[in-house]
Image (tube, rainbow, N blue to C red; front, side, top):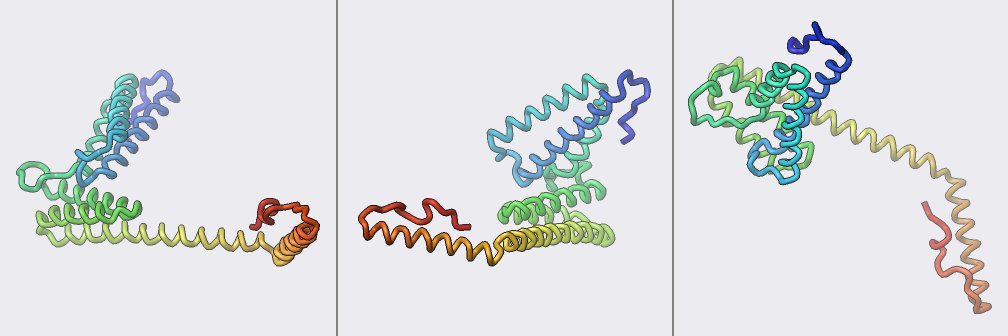
Length: 218
């Protein structure tokens, strides 16, 4: 990024690490903004404390390492994308480029909500997206946003397919661990224990209360 300038830096390793830390903090801030995208005022106490701590650390690291420009650039990008805009007000937020970025943010938040199973939240994000789209008349821009949404939701489908494939792979592995001979061996051991229980019951001297107390059936 153009704000990461290592010229005239005494310790480049420290500087690079600071840059990475700034990016990581901004990424964490973005995640919280997406989580409470439809209404940031409803942020939980725990997340608010985490958010405030992230902002404090971001300021500290940026100031101590001369990375204010990087911090501002990254946070402006997050704000433009994930801070909900009021379309009833005039200003820069109603500029086409800004509305497009806002649309992308609403789509990102909707996808995140769906991945988390928060259908109500996803619907709220969809309503916000509709409000933004009403401000766009250029069909080419609308098509651009539609393509972005299509690509993002294909990511959702792929993610779902990957999870399903991994689950199926694990099921196959688990089945391979349970070989027929192993199953038969467990049955044989169980039968032996049951026989012992029956014999000792007849002698009024029980050995085991329950088979499963001594044998884990997988």
